[in-house]
Length: 191
Image (tube, rainbow, N blue to C red):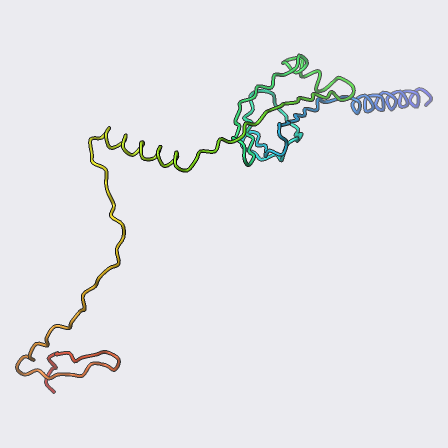
């Protein structure tokens, strides 16, 4: 009886030790922080809206990410950003770093971007470019430009009713229902 109890205690100890070691086994926490100059740009990562910069976001996979930054008064910046894996995340080493290293490994990446102010084109220059483009298209196709005259007020001549035709022989004239002007000529069947 004593040997069975000792054996049970040994199994319980090893089980508790295994549970404790598994709870200490780590994982890799990956975080990306995006900062812009000036701050306050709206960040999209792989076409998903994240928030306004500076902002941090967790990620799972390394590789190329599509970064898009949008801010009023600045040009929209779109970049393909390569995020290389660290040495401990290269297969097959990643299996051990993800499952058996005690504690938690943190991989923090910081990405800095500078936004360019948006160039303002004067209205006259913009209209000039549009005219050049229109002339260029017509000269390339060999067609004359289409000139659309300015709209004018429509002049509708007064409409007069056509003269009433005489009723055919044997027909009677029935009055139109109320609200409808004039009379209609329809042959009625004999009674």
